[in-house]
Image (cartoon, rainbow, N blue to C red; front, side, top):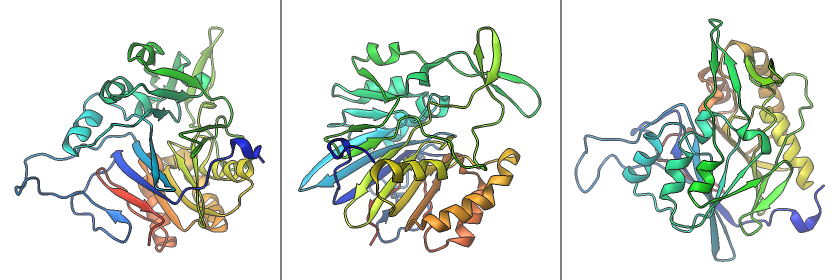
Length: 320
């Protein structure tokens, strides 16, 4: 358990706005605590929409004692989608001073320069020390070796922002958010993305994506909220580590990418479902790289828990 002096402060409620995700649907139904974007703008139906892409970016606002603090988790992929969604959604970035990068892949920090250019305040960017490692590669199914984009620390300094490296647990945002830092891999069914490689001393070796990290929030009277980017460490490993760090077993919500898409993760689907049922979160929001098969499984087996994400959606926790 963490020293109480660096444990996250319990909050009254949390609002999460989906700035970027793989999915956009103007017809998604609203429900208690879940607000969808309106198709109409200024009394008209526009020939425009939010943009979806294989990426994720969340604006997270925590409220406690009449005050609030906002952070952003991840920065999308392309230079087009995130700025467009900020403009189309009339998103106000004033007051945001903290940007957390879950790991150094293009679908999580590709639009970081565009995001930082839109934030009017002096911001801090939190990332694991190896998030900027290069060269990294991905061996595609067809055997093609694809080079990962290079992410420069200069993106941050040129925007007059500050890079804060987070190898271990770090509390930010007036003490309301806990970044896990590197997550231990303990179970036997979760593994990092097969085909991920890194070049070390001229040789290609497996890249276990050790920079993967998550954000933890403690919701008063409800338990932990665990927010992931891709959960390359494994969503169950991530939740288990969140419980270990805080000493709190009760989990209210797990939200983000769970990276269960594709043939390499078929064997992890059932064990993940079984473990999630044991953890018993009240809310499950599978996003981004979770994959259609895993999402369908969660929807069918945990219909009262699963909420559908989509760009432009606002979740207000606790859901009433």
